[in-house]
Length: 216
Ligand SMILES: *Cc1c(COP(=O)(O)O)cnc(C)c1O
Image (tube, rainbow, N blue to C red; front, side, top):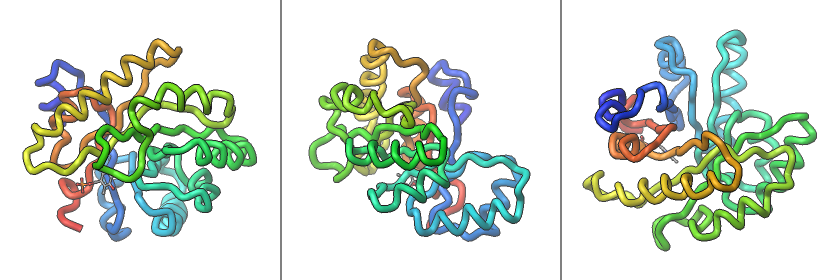
């Protein structure tokens, strides 16, 4: 990670590592917490509820940051807002409203990343890139939702260099919305097979499972 940042003329501190712990047993998660990782990512609410509660019980002192990286259904929002520091998968206005409602009840401002769809076919979820500025305008009034950046999952391509144009597009989107009054927006992009390219293209949050834990 550090080499990829340096190669791109970036400081390694600009890039945060999110250890993706889906399907990983508790003992193994405890080991990566021991070596100092504090940002953890989960994809499924059901699985995350138990893990997060158990880990908090086992170690109430260490402050972990939990990231929801998987698709979020409206009926799971209450759990998501209770458990997660950052939701990476905001992809509809209805979902934003639901998050706002539950966050308001908890007296919390929920940090979210807008999941962006860059190619027509490549994923079911995500806001189409052209619609992102209008999407931001539409959810601006929600006082318990804070947009802190963008996330994307590019199509899986054997050669990670082929995903570079997708990452570059997300970075350009970020540049273009800075005009809308944002500062320091995060880019959640890059997984085990393509994180180096993602960092070269401006990623600030890489989501890594396999490269840390081995195949699931
Ligand atoms: C599982 C998952 C990851 C981690 O993928 P690896 O290839 O194991 O690093 C990252 N992001 C999302 C959205 C995932 O679902």
